[in-house]
Image (cartoon, rainbow, N blue to C red; front, side, top):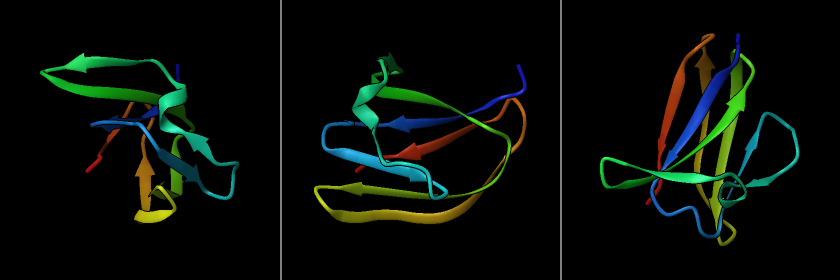
Length: 79
């Protein structure tokens, strides 16, 4: 498997993200699990350079360029 992953840490309720100019996705649409007492939600992504935008209730939380290598897990901490 050559994919990478975005891993959102924290409460996903009301949080949406856009990777590059793809469609907006709710973080809570994926199954979440407990990781050391913190709620974690993981999404598969293609390796490479991406623009990540994360919003909650219409407020921009994160806007940054990220690089994902094959097999990487990029962690995003939610407030």
